[in-house]
Length: 234
Image (cartoon, rainbow, N blue to C red; front, top):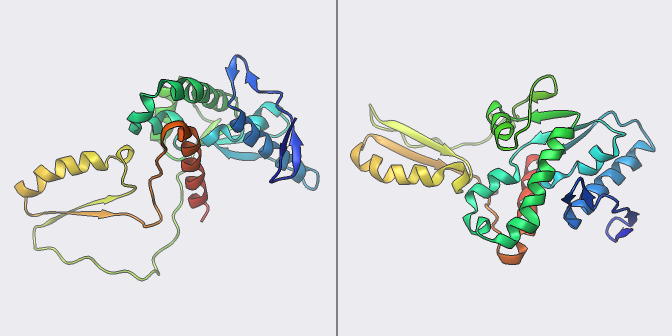
């Protein structure tokens, strides 16, 4: 039994291993905490379904418990996040102790979820290929993320361009996974050669790339995931 002091209750660590997959203890503790919270809600009202992101395999305990249908949201799984973290991929200890079991657990969650929500056809296709899982309707639903209506927000129009000019716009986080490195590498050749091309790079001050270092790499990845979850609910 493990005591979570912050939430003030105990939960079992029965599934510290799953079909030969070693579950990192802090991952299981968090997943079991989520199940316990769902159980508390179910004591007062009916729970028709639980939605959980693939990050941290948050819905793992709910899925294994089997009492509540679970929908897993496909955002950025560990496999894709690692593609822009070469310093972590070269860390054999991190790859063996954290990445290998987490990749297996993510695959298990995707396979075992009642339904799958993908925010785009691209992410569904990429995860299907990378994790060797079948994602097909009706179990799979493609529902893009919505945007807050900003039509009434104050805005400053960009300077007008000369007739015949071409504006190239990048919107997103400044990290390699989003392709900004490729864009800038091309831009340094493109812009001098084509002076009529104007490049705008738009980011939000609230969008920060979190990096992890050394032995705290796993915790850094989890903070990265949770920060994205928090921003998605604002």
